[in-house]
Amino acid sequence: MKNLTIDDFRLMLQRALKRIQEREEEFSKLDALTGDGDHGTAIVSAFSAAVNAAEKGTELKTMLSDMGMAVMMQTSGSTSTLLGAFFLGMSDSVSGIDPDVTGIKTMFSGGLDNVRKQTKANVGDKTMMDALIPAVKAMENCPLEEIEEILSAAALAAQKGAEATVDMVAGFGRSRNYGERSKGFMDCGAASWSTMFAAFAEINSQTS
Image 1 (tube, helix red, strand yellow):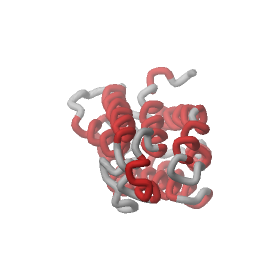
Image 2 (cartoon, helix red, strand yellow; image 1 turned 135 degrees about the vertical axis):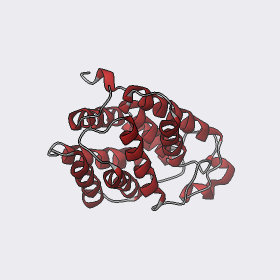
Image 3 (tube, one colour; image 1 turned 90 degrees about the vertical axis):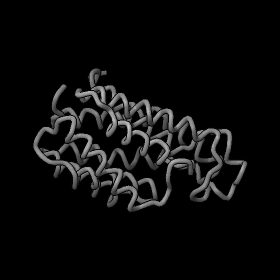
């Protein structure tokens, strides 16, 4: 695939929501170890708002903006703030009707840049940034020219980043108050965001 159509991206979002819903209980159980235990519910609600907004979209840039605003207006909490910022940043950075590989890299990089404006968390802090930052960097650095290939690179990097949080001591947010007790399990945010990227990489099998 050389270009990403709005229909392609809409299917990617629907697949991501499905995969996140499948792991909703798991995400909340991970969150309960150091937090409120509601991350599964929060990420499903936020992503559902985005997908519902995307169903009405006819142009990618506007659709991404509508998605970001829907997430922020219809749901609340840090999950919504960060996911909404991600889609709004993508909207600000995308150009053209059906972006090619370079355009997609720029779009995802813009999403990350906007999330960085909302949080100071970085790789190693045991947050969703441990999945998001490696995923976007892997896309940016991927020399291959097919969309499927850069999405696969992002998914692999996000998964590795999420897995790395198991051995981390939380350095950000409420979890950092647990110190060494925050080790030994995956961060819920990193788990959910890596699930999103894994679903995006299923672009060649969108029918199931």
